[in-house]
Length: 428
Ligand code: EPZ
Image 1 (cartoon, rainbow, N blue to C red):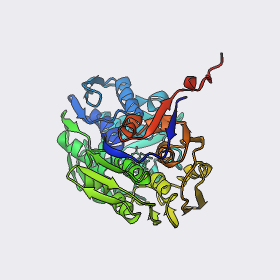
Image 2 (cartoon, protein in one colour):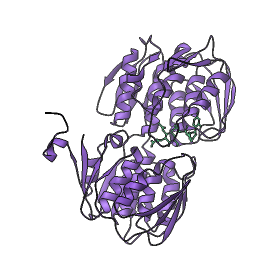
Image 3 (cartoon, protein in one colour):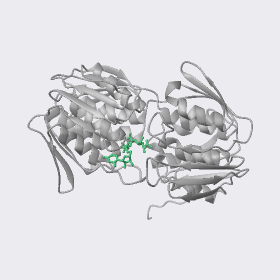
Image 4 (cartoon, rainbow, N blue to C red):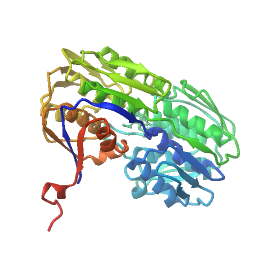
């Protein structure tokens, strides 16, 4: 298995360009199944979660044609299958979106249960509640989630908690349902708005995306469209924190600053200077971070997907900070890895109490999940010595060309395979 080897202590300087948003792409690509003609999707991030979705679309019978590394033509007209089996689902959370897309396209869906980062139980009860409000029958049959509907009619769904996935799935299924669907307590993330804009560009009639009440007036036909995915808010935030942690000076370009507001506000609280342009933010930091408290919340609150990265910055702060995780029940697994590097963090239920240390020391660590892996990279960039990060396939799920992007701003980071370590795990 590959590893990242990071030689820390280098200040990041220069420019990093952000790729398309993972959590928008993995929602928009399955939604192409609703179209009756080909779609061209641009600014698609070149990451393994997206590769998995594209493979599943092909397996369903869609014609997927790469027009460039980040642009794809997808023609769903020949799709007849409504089954997404275990290998097609690839243990990704986003495979659940095929439920809404196939229900919306052919009133039937049979999808392997979704996987996803081990940051807590990943139930889909709210997704199912939404499908049932549209008139579908949902059951579990030999380990597969089976949904079917004679016809899909509009309905009102009051989500028990703010759920990105349920909001996405219900919006997709409702786009071609007959009548008006209302999602109350809807998620407001930028990727929800991006999905609504994509569906509307195909001829859907969706109002209120970005607020906590989304209305979808179902339409009979949706046509192919050309659509460019928004920049990735969390990738941008990750590099903003890396710039601050290394006391560097980095311009992060191809961003929508409004999507970064809560991250920018917290970084300023921690002592960073942030300059905002139309499509870039510039992060400079020339001193030790200042302690501050963070509580993750659904958008527009501080994103849970930035929690491990920001906690790593606070591990170096002057003073004690408290990080509270209010979205996921177990998103502190990375803390143990940081303590191997000398961090002083105590987890107490939903909170981590972080007593800042002057510096971290290199140690062999692993990526427990996607954003935990990003936190390990940030820690390695700062730590004295050579940090080896294993299980980096998690990082490849959500960060395009992370080695190239960081190397371009002065980081000493390499992707190394086991063979390069002079031994191979494969039995001889
Ligand atoms: C999406 O996951 C993201 N993944 C996650 O990002 C992100 O952490 C999360 O939204 C919150 O922003 C994708 O978009 C592919 P939720 P999702 O439904 O949809 C509970 C990353 O790092 N819940 O908003 O699975 C759930 O257990 C990943 O990019 C139910 O109880 O998250 C959680 O506590 C990690 N029942 C809370 O709601 C349901 O039916 C929020 O979950 C659905 C959710």
